[in-house]
Length: 394
Image 1 (cartoon, rainbow, N blue to C red):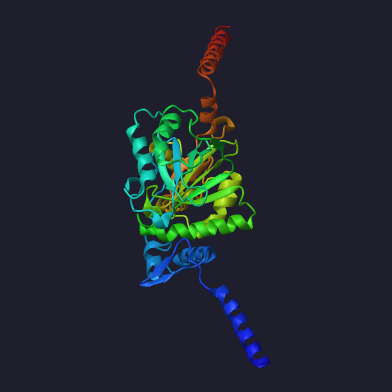
Image 2 (tube, helix red, strand yellow; image 1 turned 180 degrees about the vertical axis):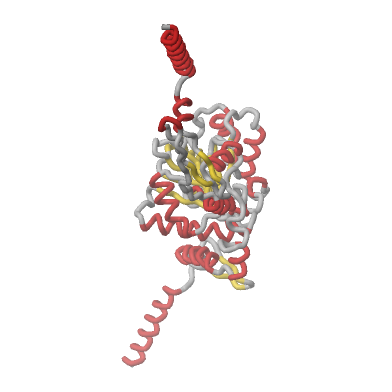
C-alpha cells in the first residue's frame, strides 16, 4: 500500500513538472508550410538576428564576382562629379532594406515615405533650399524619425497625418515644426546604400560595409560618436559600395561627402582619415553637399584624380619625367668678355639654350636705364672724337 501511494505521488509530481513545458500562445506566430510555430518573444528576436547574419554570409561566389567588390566594373570610371547638386538632405527612418520595395518612395505599401516624398515634390517651388530625400533604416524607437543635414536636427516619430505640416513649417518656412520637438544631433553619421531590391550590387556590398564599419567603430570605442545606417537608393549603383558621411570638418562645419567603390578594406581609412582628421580620400570621392557637378569636376581636374583617371595620371607623370643635362659651352668674346651659355635637353634630346650673360644683363635693365646708358656712351664717343680732332689740329 505504501508502495502504491508512493508511485501515485511520483506520477503526480511528474505531471506537475511537465505542465511547465506546455507551450504558451505568443502574440505573433511563424509559419513554415502548413506547420504553425509559436516561439516565445525571446526566440523571435534570436530568429531575426540569425536570419540577418545568414543573409550576409550566404552570398555565392558567383554573386560576389558579379555584384560584389571583385566585379569587373570596379574602378573603371571617374567618380568626381557624379553627385547631383543639393544643399539639404532629409532622411526618413522607416523599416529596413529587407522591407523596401525597389521604389520605396513611390510604393503604395509604404505610405509614409510616399507621402513625404510627394509633399516635398509638390512644394518644390516653395522650398528655397535644394532638398534631397532618402530613406534610412528604422527600428525600435526610431520609426518615423526625420534627420536633417547639414542642420543636424532630428524630429521624432513623424506620422502620415503630420507630413503636410512638417514640410510647410520646416522645409518651406524654415522654422521649428509646431507639432514636434526639435532635437540637436551630435557626432558623425554614415549612410550606406544597401537597397538590394533596387540593385543587387548594393544588396551585396552594403551589408558587408555596414558590418565592417560597426566592427571597426566598436574596436575604437566610438559607438556613441559615429552612427551607421543602411539607406535607400542614392544614385550610381554601379559605384557600389556607396556611402555618405556627414561629419564636422576641422572648423566644426558639417560637411556631406559621398564615396564610391568603397570596400571593407577602405573602412579604417574612412574612420581614421576622413572622420578623425577631416581628410578626403581622393581616389574614392564622388562629390559633396553644397557643390554643383561642375564644381566637383573642377576639383577633380585640379586636385582629385580618381578611378580610371588616377591610373592615367600616374602614367602621365612617369612619362613626363625629364632628366636634364648641362650641355653648355663657352666662347671668348672681345676684350675678355665671356658669352658662356648653360643649356639642357628636353625629352626628345633637343638642346634648350639659356640666354647669355650679356642678354640677361640687358634684359634685367629697365628701358630708361638702357636709354641713359646709350646717351652716356654717345657723349663719351663725342668727347673722344673732339679730343682726337683737337690733338690733330694742335
